[in-house]
Length: 451
Image (cartoon, rainbow, N blue to C red; front, side):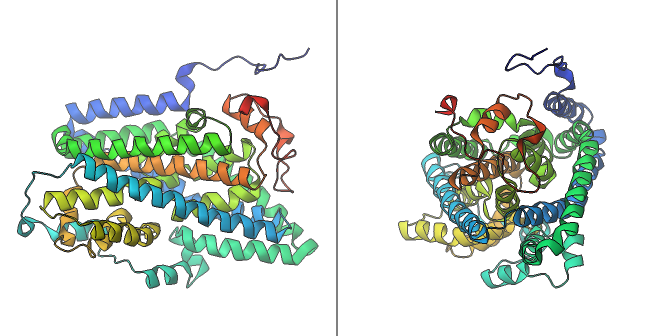
């Protein structure tokens, strides 16, 4: 019996079994519990922390497997170099646009104007506690990419170092040729094992969201979270403007709408936002992007690299926060200072991966070039960051997905028919992606419905 096109051939699962619904339900219940029983809500913090730790324990080995198999599955080293170069160009252009948008919108809405904060009243200790006393410099950032010990890189979950080791290992595996096939087979099996573990862990996502929401409201209270309403509103206006840019970009390059893409990864975006960790959804994004027709080589290089170099939400936050703090301290920024902020932020925004309190480390480093704004002023952002951080992480996550789709299309390693079916949430044939080739069975298939 043939199955009509568009039919799943099976009974549609009830809405309450959807991970997205369960995560939203956990969020709402957590907000209610945190509001009604603050002390109990504050005590639920381990639920969120435990879930993130469960995911992080497999992120480094997953990145290694995905990157190595992606490179080794494509013998064309020139193509891999092209993917890497195009990814870096894309990351630089898009994050610079985000930096400019954050600055311009903060200047227009002026969220800090009229606060008249005295710099002498600022608590420098609060910022140091958030950042762990870490400092950011271009030289140190480059050195930190090189691992002293591979084992330590995996133990510390330092994705930049794991990525570098993975890239070198992938190239070495290609050089080994047939001698490397047994190791390739082992890696593919190990990757399947990791995805199976992810499936088990994800069943705890609603519980984790409940714990994070209850802790946030119970610990900080609704009033403190909304006390900087204008700054929070300004940031989300910047996010909305940036999403419009991404919508135009993905429509022109890939031929699909942003809403459909976000709907496809809605569980991952919601989970990343509510837990405050985009690393928590790296395994799921990897699997979904391959299912959506992106070649394994593109996903293996672009997605992990994006976690370090394509932080769109963090870029919006960085420049918007600098302008907010300048306004709050009655510092009038000149055009020269604004341009300097952008130029410095282009560098500091790339060092926001693998550092405790990374967004605040980059913020204090950027403030250092603006006269009249002490680094301690970053303490003013700690309050609204409880809410801003959700949008920052969600925007980062959406940015990773769009970057991978755009570069896959750019490299003609995107099966658009498979993408169209994935975005409509129709079942995919098991043979659509060839595990050993790293590329879809029919790459860059044009579809009239995508136009």
